[in-house]
Image (tube, rainbow, N blue to C red; front, side):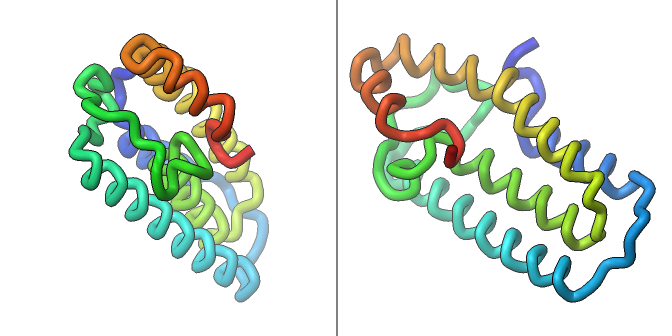
Amino acid sequence: MELKLPPPLVALICAMIIYFLPNYEETNWVYRCFAVLCFSFGVVVDLCALWAFWKNKTTINPLDPNKTSALTREGIYRFTRNPMYLGLVCLLLTWTFWLGNAFALLIVWGFIAYITRFQIKPEEQILAQKFGKIYQDYCQKVPRWLW
């Protein structure tokens, strides 16, 4: 079941669930400010990740990590091993804050758990086989997410 759904599709499904959750609060300017900050951070993180992959001339296809031609460790990848997924989390947080629905944070945590289990861990196994000690050293130095 691993690596079957593209992470952007999983994020879109989560965003739809968030939209249809009951909301018990009014959105205010504080939530909207957090939404703008999360959106800005998420877009910058995703663009930096794409730029790093483009510079390394490696694939961004999350469904076939076997096509990875280089281990990207520069730029944003010095701070997180999964900036593209982190960017998706930021976009889900954007949506959560924009709608002012604190309950939706559970969906965001669910996204993180799902992506970690069904996307990141299988990718890590493939990258460990492909790049060996270099990848293991990288994993020791750089967190999976930001924590």
